Length: 409
Image 1 (spheres, rainbow, N blue to C red):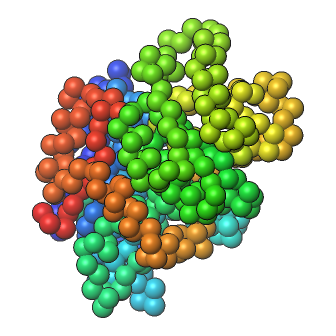
Image 2 (spheres, rainbow, N blue to C red; image 1 turned 135 degrees about the vertical axis):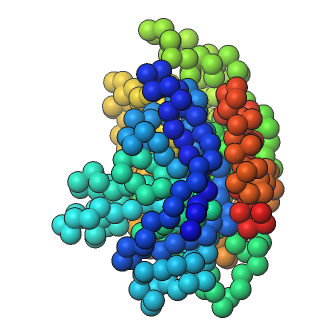
């Protein structure tokens, strides 16, 4: 059986220039425990645009290109067409949402075999579909081979789910990733009513949704450089939010690779603006949750004593910030927690996300994310859209949210 995949390879390795195109490949024979899935719906999100950017922008580019190419995609929803897994768990015809994280093969790895947090593998050998480093190829393809633990059944074949029931599950991996980050510390959602949110993309929208549902009296202050994305997030969450639009010149300064020494001092005026408006919105109080979901270098805006405060739970979820500066004022903040959280969490979190989507989150996904995303019918339309965004390269702010619809091709 032939398979079409969207593959990123070197255009010029010496200059670290990339190109993305469709390739045809043969499907490998399944090993014990693996399944073959026909992809139905796959989101194209910010990580892909960074990883496949012609100028190689992703901070882990060397990992992605460890084998000189990769087929991206660690999420989506599909239907099982072949299986060598236990029939008590899955059967041909079942529908699965793909979580994309794979454990190592060591029986004595506590993180992978007991905690089921594969991004924290004791041996550093946990992998993510489509992310290089010896991982399985990703879901940007007609068919994908999935190992055990990289997926969960969302519907059985005999349930005959409709299209509108299936589509939201292509975001299950992202929901699980963000829910894992927000619930890792038991007090993060329980006592965090004032959320400072950087970014307004997929991840930020989901974080805002989860926070607003978990904390009924919550307020969310959103900092973002795209007015369109700000409007989308505010309209989806409601009156509990206030937006702060970052000026373009500040964004350029933050993301400029040739930043001058001491450039952080030049940000003082914009940091003060954020602080004043945020404190006013929070009725004179400081944020008790900071969630950075931005795809840009935004840490310099918040790693200071104007934004952070004692007892703040700080979650740097985005991955484009170069470093967090812990100066003497921050070091002395009692109760400040800065927690790095990656991955879709343990099995319980993954299964609970499925129930969360079925019990109401599907409406949010449909109205706030899918409605504002470009639907690309088939792999050919997808690659045409990708090429338009990359030739010449567009900034992340210029690229529309989108997803691939394989079902109606």
